[in-house]
Length: 98
Image 1 (tube, rainbow, N blue to C red):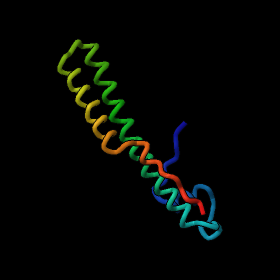
Image 2: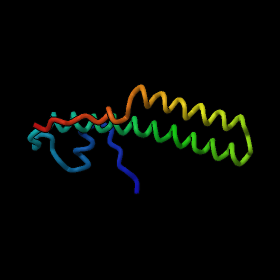
Image 3: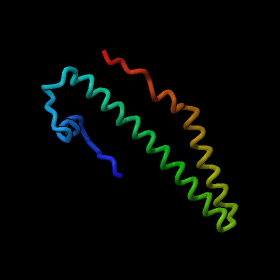
Image 4: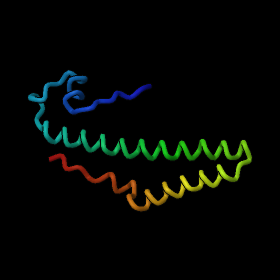
């Protein structure tokens, strides 16, 4: 199953066949949409980093390569540093829907 990608809030509304003028809180909905896009971008970057680390680790084991193992550890350490500097749980803040 592929997820649809929308570049803008207006493209998102068009896909849903909804007119902006019919929304009670169009500005707030757009704000939430943009925040969700930002969070998805960060999560995707983390996912790609960890998948790369995993692939490199599998290759290191397969080839019995200490050098590749060290590189995978370095990627993991970069992820941990990024995670501690910008804790992923802090990405999610309470939304005010009023």
